[in-house]
Image 1 (cartoon, rainbow, N blue to C red):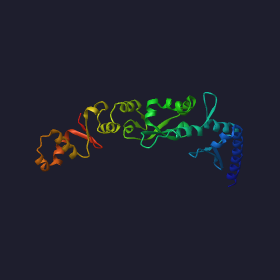
Image 2 (cartoon, rainbow, N blue to C red):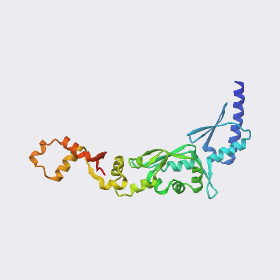
Image 3 (cartoon, rainbow, N blue to C red):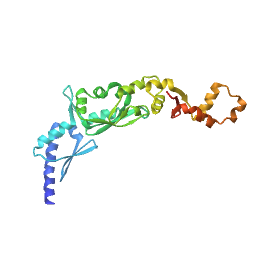
Image 4 (tube, helix red, strand yellow):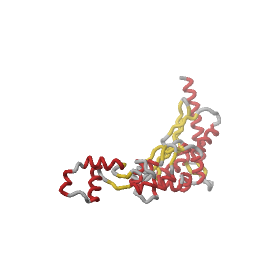
Length: 254
C-alpha cells in the first residue's frame, strides 16, 4: 500500500510537471489533454476516445515533449494543427444519411475513425483527399501509420471495399457507367461482370410471376380468355431457369 502511495505521489509530481510544460506551450494545447495520476502510471486522455498509460522515464520534459508532439502536427507554413482540429475537420466531412460512405480508422490518429464520402475518397485518392481538407504535412503525418476501412454503407460500395482496401478505380468505373447504382449493385450480386450488366439487364419486377406475366403481355400471343387459366408460378419457374435476380432486378444469364 505504501509502495502504491509512493508511486501515486511520484506520478502526481509528473502530472504537475506535464501540466506546467503544456501551459508553456499554450492554453489551446492544454485543452486537448486531460492528465490523471494513478499508482500504475500517468494516464493521458485525448478527445474522450482513448486513455494512454505513460510509464517509465525520469525526464519529465522529454516525456512531455513526446506527448505534445503526438497531438500536434506542424503544417507547411510553420503553423501547428492540433489533433482536435484535425478530428473536428474530419468529423465535419461526415456524409448525409443515404450517401454511400466508408469508415476509415487511422492509427496515425490513435485509432480515431471517421465516416467519409465514398465517391469523394475514390475520386481524389485518400492522400489527396486528406491534403485537400487538411494540409499536406498533416496528411503525411496521419498516413505514416496504418489505416483500415473498418466499415462501409451503400449497396454499390459494398462490392468494392473490405478491411484490406478499397478498389477505387472499379468503384469510379461503376459510378461512371451511366447505369443506376442499384442496378449495378444487383448485377454484381448476381456475379455479372460490370461491362455485361447493361446488356444482361431486363428490368425490375416484384416477383418471378410478375416478370412472367409481363413477358407474356409483351409477346401478346396468349388469348385474354385463357389468361386466368395459366399456372403463372410454373411458367415463371420455367422461364427463370435462364435468369438471375437480386432485389427485384432481373438479368439474363450472360
